Every structure is written in structure tokens, then in C-alpha cells.
Picture 1 (cartoon, protein in one colour):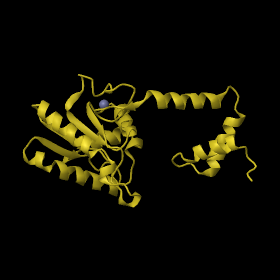
Picture 2 (spheres, rainbow, N blue to C red):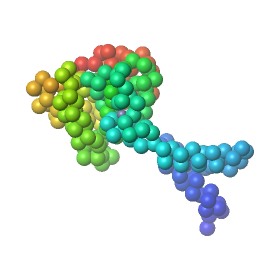
Picture 3 (cartoon, rainbow, N blue to C red):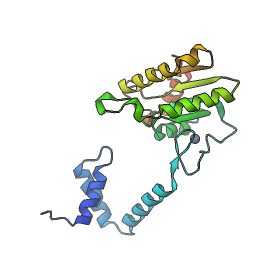
Picture 4 (tube, protein in one colour):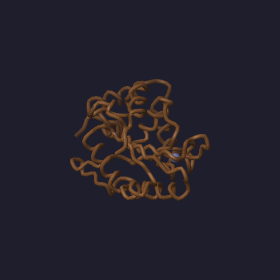
Length: 208
Ligand SMILES: [Zn+2]
């Protein structure tokens, strides 16, 4: 029988699900909240519930937002003829914080990873195709897709897959596809890249 009350065990279990958090850290975090004054545990709980209730995915780019269409997609000040394809919403945050990019985004929701059993059908390729087709129909300027998946094996495989599905549009001259330059070291995570590294990677992007 466990010596811990069930309610405490539940919290440890939930913290253990966080990325990079093992059972020991999860226990430490739980005890932090158990001991902390000012009802910090209640505040954390309420903040999580509020986030769950108020946020959704933008129906156009699938970034996290509290509107149907996020303020990036709906902004007339952004360049609607450039679409930067990223893995996760935090990659959008990295680009936005750097202030170096003024186009739109598309959040794939991950990368193709046979090792982790993630296939193309689990990512938003269908939605991406629909999005690209609708931009091609509306825009006379054409469209640039900037593939900004991480410089990992999975990120490269995903970039190749994107190239495959849109090859026909490239041949027809309707879009061109570029990939971030290798200023980012292999295995680096885009979301942690500093402004200068991101700027170099974006400026040095090459057609694929
Ligand atoms: Zn959006």
C-alpha cells in the first residue's frame, strides 16, 4: 500500500507526464506545491483549466489561439504569399520573438518518425494541401513554402515528404519550396535557436 494519499499520487503522476520530467522531479514539484503558501496549487490548477477552456487551434495555420483565426493569419500587414511550415506552436513563438519573419505559418503538429510510430497520416498534411491550394487560387503572386522543420533525421524526412506532395505545383511554377539553411546545427531544436541563428537560417534558405 502506498504511503502517499491518492490525491498527492495523482499530482505526481500528472507531473511525470511532462517532457523531461522523471518521477523524482515530479515528486519534488508536487511537494513544492504542497508546501507553498498563497494557494499556488489552486492558481496552477485554475490557470491550466482556463488554458484548456479558452485556447484552440487556428483553423488556418493550427497555431494555438483564442480566436477562430489567429491574429497572424488575419493580419493584413503580414505577407500572405509566404508560408513557413513548422513542427510545433513553440517554433512559431521562436520566429515571432526574433522579429525576422513577416509571412504566415503552418503548424504540422510534429514530424514523420518511424521510430516513434508517427506516420504522415497523423500530421496535418491534408490540411496543408488544402491551405496551399486555396492560397494558389487566391494569390497571383504565387506562394513560397519555407520548410522550417528541425535539422534532424525526422525533420529532413518530413521536408522531403513535403517536397514530394507539392512537386506538381513546383513544376507548374505555382509555388517554390525552400528549406532553412544549415546555420542550425544538426539535431538543434528550432524553438531554442537564438535570433541571429534563426535570421541566418532564414536568409540563407535555399530552394529544394
Ligand atoms: Zn493562424
